[in-house]
Length: 80
Image (cartoon, rainbow, N blue to C red):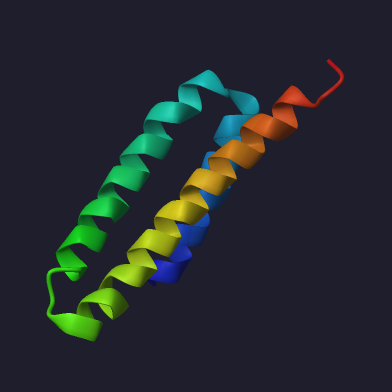
């Protein structure tokens, strides 16, 4: 379920960044802030368990950032 939400969020961010590049920054920052909170909460577990619990959130946050950047980059390369 969470994987589907992250994938849907990435697609929405990429489309939003392509259509409205400047207005896509706030939703991207909000999504990354939420995932960062999950990562920080997971990392409070002791030892290896903390790394294992925080890793999905950090990789999802990185994916959100990349999808927004890719949408903006694609928009800047368009000929019009």
